[in-house]
Length: 175
Image 1 (cartoon, rainbow, N blue to C red):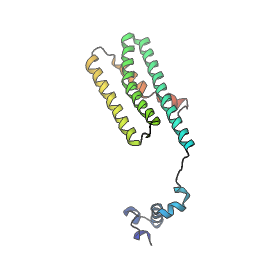
Image 2: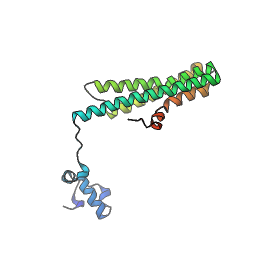
Image 3: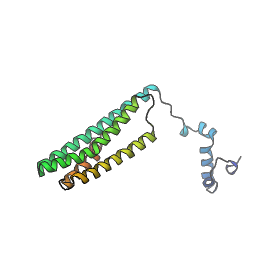
Image 4: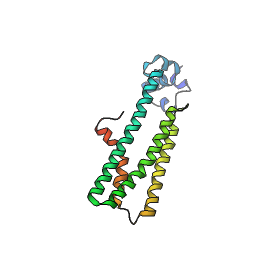
């Protein structure tokens, strides 16, 4: 049976070179996957799953702690350089991202201990809701306190918490 006779081979593979057709045909034929170690199935033991889950939980806590520390440093710097209003603005900006992010992390952590682990779709929608909540908080803050707010401090607080994980990258502490 040639590569062009195989219904599993897509149109792109049938128009390529002979080597490309052969490689694509092998990748799509189940028997070739079983004999090729490149396509070996990954099987995790319960101990492996537990270790991965523990590392994921630790990573969530580390990311939240790094964001909190960076947010606190921005708040203290704004307060020290520009006074109380700037410090309060930086605190509001930091909280605008930290609170939805902490709630999202809590949702992920609760999923680890539940009967069903959170999947990629839950992560995607949680991330989307977190960003939407942050945007709504920023709009509400601008609406209510826009005249009083020290905008540079607010934005530095927001960005500081958003990029707090960079501290983990620099310290090579990402799980």
